Image (cartoon, rainbow, N blue to C red):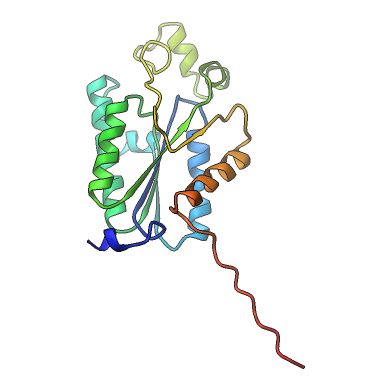
Length: 200
């Protein structure tokens, strides 16, 4: 009930970045988290897919079943953050629409606002960046089940925001995203305090 009567800019909030490996999700998520920590009163939690894999989802494989389980765990943690009025910024490939929809449902049932951000950087750009060398290994057949190579990525059909990090530098992409968040009422501009001058 408390969540229902809060303004959107005071509700629990989950901003979920999805996209291919090396699309720029983690960079943008980190920049957004730092911006919100500075400008928003709500506590901010960053849930990065690689970090979650090392701790919360250690031992899970990259089968579809285990990938869905990984997203379910992230969605559950994000929903707890939202339930308590905080902000969760998630950066995870999350390749399957149904798993992302389930995460949205968990957050919304907890009274939070869920905003999906598709970092739609083209596959060829991601493969060219390839900071971990994973695309090269997948293309050589050294690893299998790699999203975008021999495993599908189901792009969002109704994302609240779509960014292409091959067309925008991170600061410009972040500015665009902040504009979307403001238009949805998820965040507000920090008020500027102007000190009144004393009459002489």
